[in-house]
Length: 111
Image (cartoon, rainbow, N blue to C red):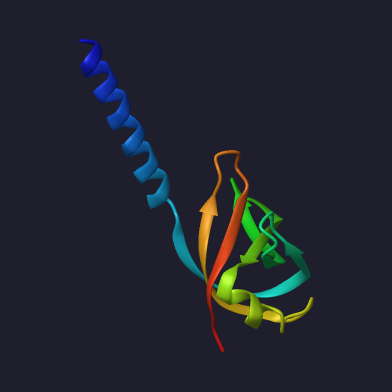
């Protein structure tokens, strides 16, 4: 009985991980950049954080929401050419964290 419980718990954990990975979806961004920040992560790698504003509607109420768009790795070099006020055209992976925060990670820049 104890072994069955351990197996079921392990199976549930694996399924939960796959379910959370499946929630990520790709999106095309074509929006104005509000701000640009260049920073270093804990491993001293440079990354770029764009802040964009998206229009949303919830139960008939329209509002604006700021969302970070991150450029990591080989996306940093082309991201350095952008500044606040520029139009960002990119393919990005959208993700919503368990605490409700949202973000995008750039996969490719569009011309």
